[in-house]
Length: 406
Image (cartoon, rainbow, N blue to C red; front, side, top):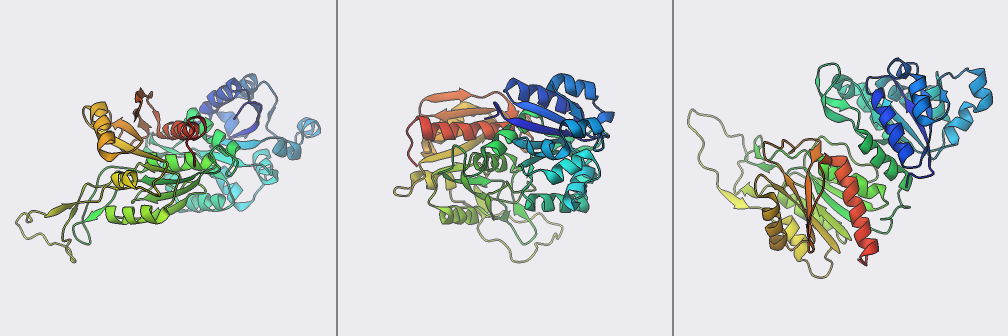
């Protein structure tokens, strides 16, 4: 999908600019042609010589360069590409884009382009969370700009939180999705249902039973399926993850609400149950906050929640052609997942180890074993975005190569 494509890469200021060098190398390996624009801030972290050596072409830096304007020109530069990628995308450049400013080469190119644009933001966690940045992101998404990341973790400033630029492999997956285009990809005729996040089962109006699911994997899967052209309905419990571009998002709180939303989304061709649905709910939630009175509360009476994966798998007429579940296990991962696939009746199970030693539940990485009727296929540990892209490709292959009719 990347081979023979022309990528315009804009590198703005930030320590994450060093990752752009690896991104250029990987794009070249896949046969893409990469032209690069380096902002004044970007040049503080990576040199034009390094970028030129890896991209194999000129590096454009100055809006008012007589040589560059006579050779290429910012209008041609902005339009003679299949995709414009900004990595890293600084808070400043995002703000310029949202306001329609054009006071340097990068912002002018972005205002003049008629091609899809993909941003990989990178900044301090407080800058990312600032209301101004949130407004700018919302405005850019409304304008059709795509995003990949940022991830959460240790930042160069010493703080911990969201703001890390996506890894090159995640940006590559997002580039492939952006180049596929909605309605033009391998899943253009497919309608998909994805569940994501935890469910919150109320104890009273304040307290609830829940789990540590972040929704990162489910949201990434919805985004990856949409990137291949699928029409996606995402049913999600409470999560801080941004909505995947193009997906129809249905927000719920409880397992019963999730089941109802899934049934309302039918018919679909593919169902991916990535949500961590609570197994139990309180039989009689209190309608007022339970007060602490010096004594421990009475035991909660619980009852079993509906099994969404089993319900979708057991449907007769109208059953999704391909039903995929997840098995988050802390021990005997593969054995438990194989048994779960038999019990639920689904087509595939993706097993992942969420034991404390792995530290992946709610994190940015996953180690997957795909289990189907043929056996067990281990996948290498990867980011959840990369796992989602690989799963979307496997779904497309199953539909196209194995004769699954949708």
